Image (cartoon, rainbow, N blue to C red; front, side, top):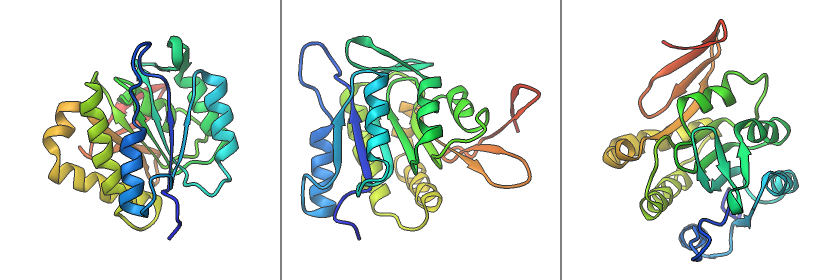
Length: 217
């Protein structure tokens, strides 16, 4: 077992006034799982250039390739400091060029079906096995505590990346369904088979991209 958590935490400044940060939550996770609060990679970003530079730089490092991105969000973009917009196209382009096992967006509204399809079905290639996050607006403290629960479960699972996220989704669905539903939390991945199919692991819903349209099956 690596001495570092398999997670890279990237965070934007949340508010003009106040020092809100998820770092303390991940410090505790690292302390519990590695007996060292510094046993994971953490950086802050403020625009599309900085988040791209960080991901390019760390992809071959000793740290894990699960990427947590904490920022304000909307249905089509996330925001760096000072409301610097980072579009879903820019995010997709970053992960078309850089390896990652999974990406967790701690951002309001961003992890909706449309964006999941844009990443997984409408892209010729993208490296992450899964994308997770919220499809509605959430309270900062509530969602941050939820993030901590998710990653505590994720860190206790074993197997391939797809096996780990599938096990995590099952536990979240079974034990935390109230919070999952209230926050509209989603985990999307591709289902391997004859046709390229996107599945939301908690609900089991499936979609395909056909004739330039997203079709629910």
